[in-house]
Image 1 (cartoon, rainbow, N blue to C red):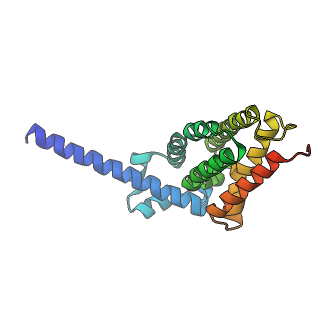
Image 2 (cartoon, rainbow, N blue to C red):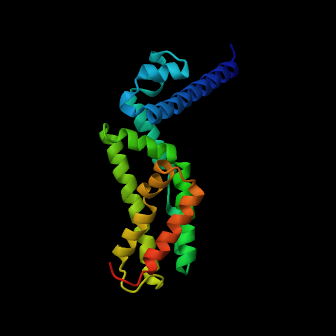
Length: 210
């Protein structure tokens, strides 16, 4: 057998293994979200993909490792730097909030399965809780930088300091706000974006101290 043929077959095996791993992760995500992470077994995942359980362990490891692989991928993909920089270029409240609301809506809609995965797993998995805390910390820091910008350009009510603006932005655009409207109430993301943006502007222009 030639070296070229061996390399070709090796590449095909690697591609097949990579596709199997991705299929397993996709199936696991769907099962974790639908059934709840604690209720899903490795056998459930194996049956969903149509592979042997031993193949599952060889490809992705334990159930905990599957969860951590999914969450690590999601966190790596969910960067907010670009959105923050775009908002910081805005020079008035309406355009800054419109930009912020739309950008957060896009990220929230895109990562809705990941958010649901965290909700379903963090109560029973310490690593998921750590990832959740990390995501929230990064999210709130980005909103605080936006709040600082809005105070610096004089776009908010004079009595509002940075922390007050940051807290109001979190109230309007935190994960719970979107989840409440979209998941609990069945709103569309378009409708939620419009309402939350109007609410944020109203709260930041409020001339009466809380």
